[in-house]
Image (cartoon, rainbow over all chains, first blue to last red; front, side, top):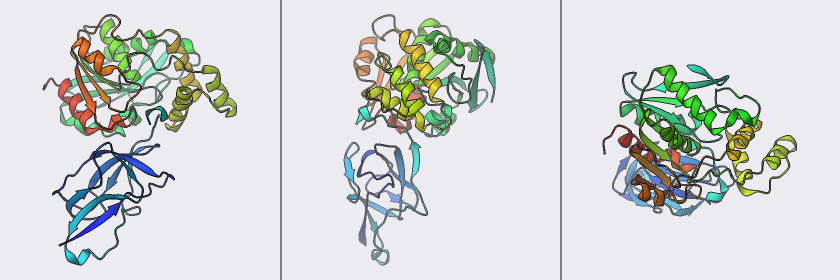
Length: 109
Length: 252
């Protein structure tokens, strides 16, 4: 087995970081591609991020309430060796982030 | 969409869930609507699966309800009359109530004004006092008319937030603010407390709802904090949905 780590993707709004609101998975969970991994909040919206990868969750990149920078590790999967050579990218094409909340009040920040 | 005439304005709502389910009036916040506040935030499944017949109202000036011109159409008592009109139109004597932000403020007042109609309250993003107090109406009008930058933080935030909601009519929303800020809903906790068992749900980063935890302790209400959530991101939290449906069906 090998590990593959995905960074927090650029959410396409010119934003540099996001707050982890709620993990939908925990270490040890088996997830399928496109399962919701986590809901994060940027200054513009709350977004659910789908999994780019099937595998077993090995490590989470932060606690709920933590701020994660774009490009920093978000989640690590344990995967079969033959898939480990793929360079990790969180999906932006096949599975777009789902916007759940489009509103934001700056005085909350 | 079903609707009823109330004080000369059409008030629309949408029902989801089993027709013979536990009836609950569900009321969105300022500048939002039934879709943006509830459906888009993933509430349909948890409500329906709990056996709740949810009546999702669009407040006047919002969503698909009427948008009369002038702040006199947006007094707090008119909003309350609208909600009663919806219950009457549906023949519902007594319901649960789920409200967010301004919708929660209205729920508190509705339960005080008509204690026989509301048997359980869930108040999300509940502010003790109206957050509209310092709203700069003139600056908001200038922003709409000419794009003039708004200096006042809350005014600017509310206008930018409202502008993001599809189909929002900003001038009508400023009418709403004018209507409710001049005849302030009384501060919660300073006066009478609803008889209905109450659950208050607030995001830990929600500054608008600061003080809600102390109020809950004072009045013996259930209090559910939502880790990491702000005033706007709280609405999609699974913890909010679970707490709300449990409270509304009386499972706790």
